[in-house]
Amino acid sequence: MELFSVADAADPRLDDYRGLTDTALRTVSDPTGGLYIAESTKVIARAVAAGHRPRSVLLQQKRVEEIRGILGDLDVPVYVVPDEVAEAVTGFAVHRGTIASMHRPELPTVREVLEGARVVLILENIGDHTNVGAAFRAAAGLGADAVLVSPGGADPLYRRSVRVSMGTVFQVPWTRITDWDAAVADLHTADFDIAALALRDDAVTLDAYVADRPERVALVMGSEGDGLSRTALEGADHVVTIPMSGGVDSLNVASAAAVALWALQR
Figure (tube, rainbow, N blue to C red):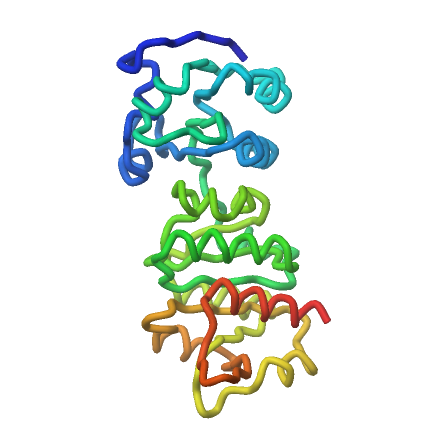
């Protein structure tokens, strides 16, 4: 890595961090494929360990040795800035002292992600980046081997998703579904039982499903507002529900994913 001290917030070398939205970063044409932002040395370390390439790093002086241990021999420019410069460029206080501009990796195919997996979490049309990040954290901590994200779902590499997941979006293999019917066919070809979590009269309880669980399971979770689409329900082999009490009919999607994944470990 190469260190550069930057004292001017208008320095063009800091343009990747200059208040750009996640959408703008994703659609930049140079580099091809776009960028995303990773915050904190822990998140950057997980991204690099997963094979993601930093384009540059912006940090405080006190974080230099930490990032040196993460980047190793990678040829990456590292911009060391005062706190006020970092805040002026990004538009927010950089509390954790380190931000990296990362190249977006090319996503694998659904078939590649399913290879060798036994438990898969599918997020259908979940638009809240916090929920996506929390669901990835549950997937990483509770035994999911892969995550599939539907075409209309929030981007796991958006800043809030990455931050809430604590970098586990880099730890769990994932990809985006481009065609729902094709993904269902790929799951069935790989002998996955598709279990849709939903409130329906013919649903089986989670404990009953787990008691006779198939070898390979794909859990499908929908948004809190609309739940699963009719297409997702029609493609499922089972509809599963988590028994509730206290007049509550459902959990937050990330909490429901955590409960279901934990149950499948038994």
